[in-house]
Image (cartoon, rainbow, N blue to C red):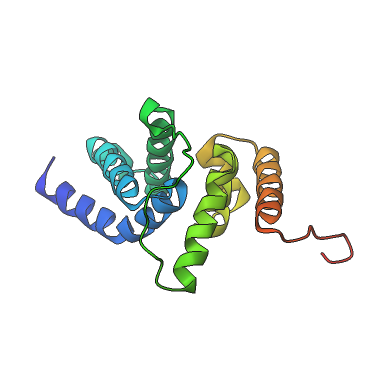
Length: 168
């Protein structure tokens, strides 16, 4: 890659790393795995940077690489966890904010992969239905269905009653 391309790539990636790390963490629930996913996505983008930098929305390509890396990681045999009778020792969370975050991650982990991806993209990355559908290669109707079902599942897990038509 030319020196100018390297500089443009570094600037592009540097400004997006915090958002990528947040998204990756919300997808996988583990900071170390999130860093690995971000590294994988950045590596893929670097390999194709000359083509990607000419795209109208290079951020969408980068986000797609992150999602693909997460989905690939979920398929690996070592990802499957086996529950035990006693959980491993964990440090005591410092405050309410940490406890709520851990609770949210546990609840997100119980959703299907697509529901979790849709909810993270829609509500944490603030993408539209159309952008989310494009990233996940789904129809907008499917994104809306996964959103509704994912939110309903989260409400059930958290213990919040479902909204009635009068409340909406």
